[in-house]
Image (cartoon, rainbow, N blue to C red; front, top):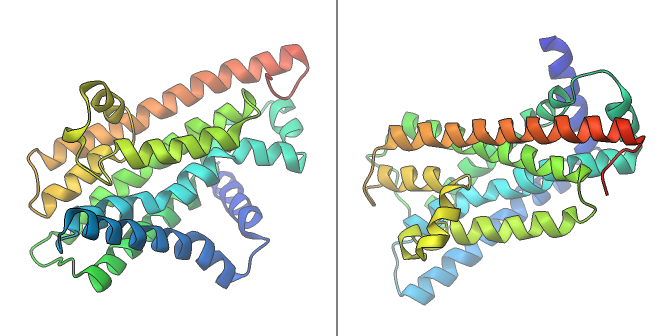
Length: 259
């Protein structure tokens, strides 16, 4: 079973990157997010008149996973429809969730690498110092963040069976994460209602935990990481529920989607 799961995960990753050589892949998955990180950090430097860009490097480094976890995983079922494989996935008696989860394995690993690369870029270009920061705990925060973000991307992918406007949904979620997770400005500056939205999103607690590692803010890092993993579990449960409903409804209606 594990061998089949890993094989499915590798085949999905090969299909996702088959159109690119390694240079195009690096520019797509790393070059564009790095340019975004540099842009927002420079914007923060001039807007807030500060040379300490640690919190913006942290926030935008975590947002480097958006290209993979949100757009890559979120458009998975839409891509399966275009490739003609959705018919087999819906009609086959296999567990649809296992197919969806296998597609998130390698994107999660790549997202972790992208976040680490973002921190390295921030260290070189903006002088963010890692002296005194526990590397093991830093990697644990990145791991929890990418697991939660990947689970969120998998939840979004389910909406590919419910809506034909995935491009709009994914782009909207990109900006929601940018505004509400504390990547560009502290969550405490948001209105009370917006802070509730922030608590329901991935990355919010991971960004807060990483800021704590760098000596900014209050809180317990371990509790924040447990809460982040808990949110990831909630996303998976929601994805399972919606998938079961959509799968059964599609089979009864003789369709491959519900729109």
